[in-house]
Length: 113
Image 1: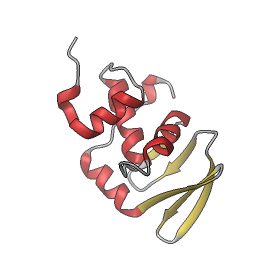
Image 2: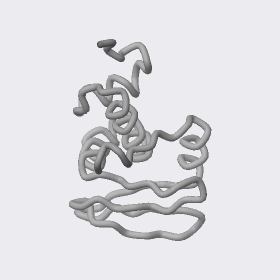
Image 3: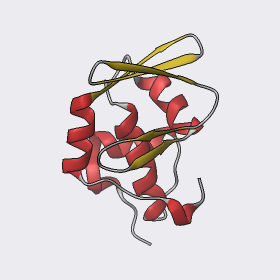
Image 4: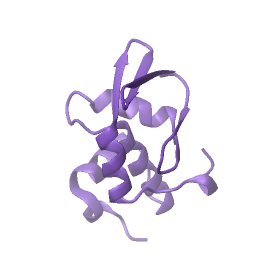
């Protein structure tokens, strides 16, 4: 996703979305459950979710990070995508370790330039 289109959700928006959306994966399919409606998306490509809050594009990188950590930490796909967006907006390196470090420790891990 081009950097000019990146938007970071507020904590209230993130909490709301995490309360109504559930993600699960089986083989190459990601299931998204919202208010009793289940939709399926390919894990090998980005997809967009149109929510009441805003339209959210889930990147392939965030899907891969989520799959890698989902059984260990319990962060949602929205948590990871939002953290990746935040790190890009504040010009930080975006990789698995930096995303997990930010989710675990918060703003104290930000490097000032």
